[in-house]
Length: 209
Image 1: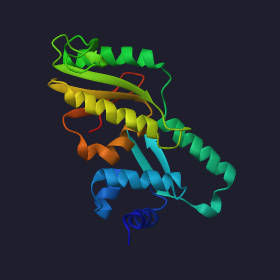
Image 2: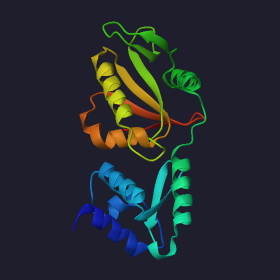
Image 3: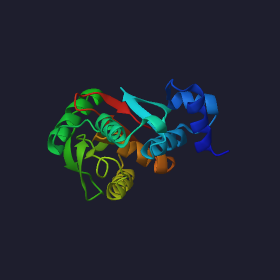
């Protein structure tokens, strides 16, 4: 039995109750947590399970195909996209919010600057260049699909950040938290000293890795 079948079997077993990714890890033994996240997102995209987001956590239940007509499926997909994509800011406004939140968190003034040795301007740099970060306000393709071009840009910025001499290096994402989570699921094991954060439009900051 595959891990995907294990997840489906567990959700069918507890139906109509819902389970989080952490619950699924605990009851199925599938590890790491990122693999379960990838499986549940894939199953939800395929219409095999229902999913809803409550705060920072996703909850899933077995899909009852015989009771779900096309109109219901369309409404469900709209709710899922809206719950994951909650941004209303312009990218420039998001950058300003990131500067405010991270400057307060780190107790240092962060400004856009070109870092010595790396010919790239970053959004969040301390005067002594010991802290370097950048802000990304991304969404999925058409609200539902993986964004290959954005994945490449994230990889580029991770590589550039790793080339700086900063003691603290990070990327802050806004709008659609699935984008950095999908990237971490695929490439998170390759990260070396770069933190990923998600910042909601109301200023709530969460470390993703």
